[in-house]
Length: 350
Image 1 (cartoon, one colour):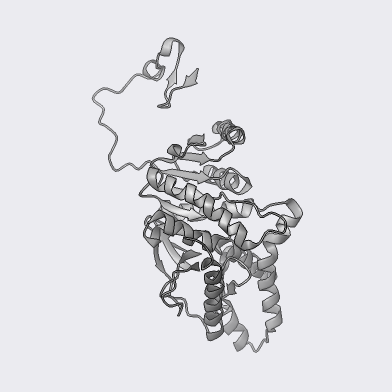
Image 2 (cartoon, rainbow, N blue to C red):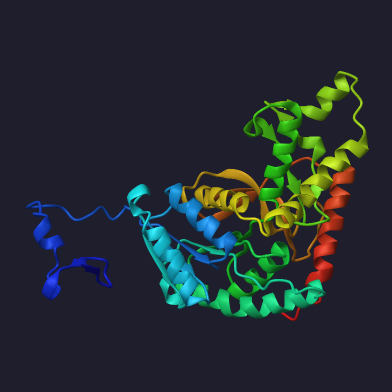
């Protein structure tokens, strides 16, 4: 037996077995028009793309998953490998193709594709190569899924999210970068590990650039609803700034450490992006630190720059940016982070 293009099973001579295997209910009403079929497309079948795809499947986040890559053999192999797990997974239709038409009608398009940095290559040159790649990817996604939300995962994520926004013509609420969502998870893990508590009970954000100029919001950390810094102050427990800086530095260097040990990062970013997908598709209105258009927020001014801020996510994409109180040093560092991104962004030909 084989699958037809419509997904029905055909027997010898083209007989549709679904018509003989099941006897239809008489006088049945058609499916409710309010029932929603969800579709996610992942662009890039590398380690990150496949970790996202695998996590999306195991968490039952979509009815249909499409994967696009420019390597047809690897792509088909990955598709078959996932399809062969059908008996162990929630029912999801899995498609894969080098042709972007397979993404048609997506609710969410997740872009992980990107050029790899060559030894000795400048960051700007890498960016220019990724810009060329995005000029092929983004218009194709827009053509086939004009109402989708875009999540950009490719690095450098903040600049490439800006690129995707410009190329797509979408309103800014529908273009999101994975940003510091994973950095914040690492931050929460380190604090939880230090205090021997569950990381889910730690509220802590890394904002700004997903990179060296990111900002740790120490003034807003709470554990189990208790503001940590004010608690320590009331208990007259001194915290050395060097200790805080070392924890932040560990967060920044975490990805480099994983890459040096196993060659790439995959599982954590897979869970991170799947969590964002759930927030959006299920309209959960969770607050996540993701890369958004920061124009007009936290003293950044009129600059068209994308960087991570705590944002509420729902079916429409970014529903709003949380008005988190920053102290003067944090706000200045956030503005400096915006300048660092803008400096690179201004050199792009877009």
